[in-house]
Length: 168
Ligand SMILES: [Zn+2]
Image (cartoon, rainbow, N blue to C red; front, side, top):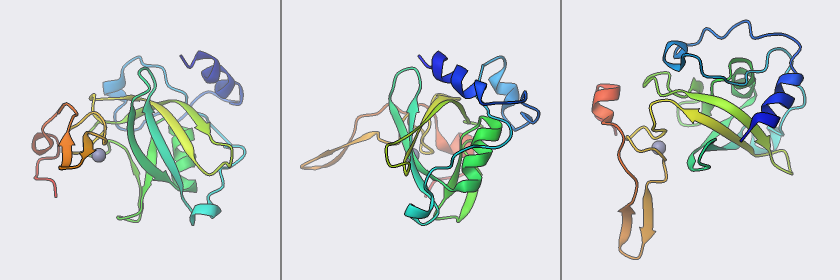
């Protein structure tokens, strides 16, 4: 459980959250999250990765790895300020909040930084039960075998219904 880390994160916070008004708050209801308001403090080493740090995303309750994404400084700051996982898309070259289109946002419960300060680990509450845009709980829903990729994950939603279009 992350109670202790939540407390230490919260202790760095001088003020209460003043801007939690992101999309998805309705769906979240009374869930507790760990936004950090104000100055974000020491920064991960963004320069090392050309402005981004790889970010591993884990279900905070089960430890299941849900996805890997990248954060730049802006998305990192927004994540801290809002408590909603916000990443940097290298292909679209822009900051995006996870779930901004699907509603499947991620409530950040804990953020860990590695020894080199160039990789982050987010522990999140995955709203909607699936992190992957093609409908699986984890992006790692296929196993590599000699014969190819074998689907081992469970499909949680139909992407055509969630996004209203066919995925590429
Ligand atoms: Zn995915």
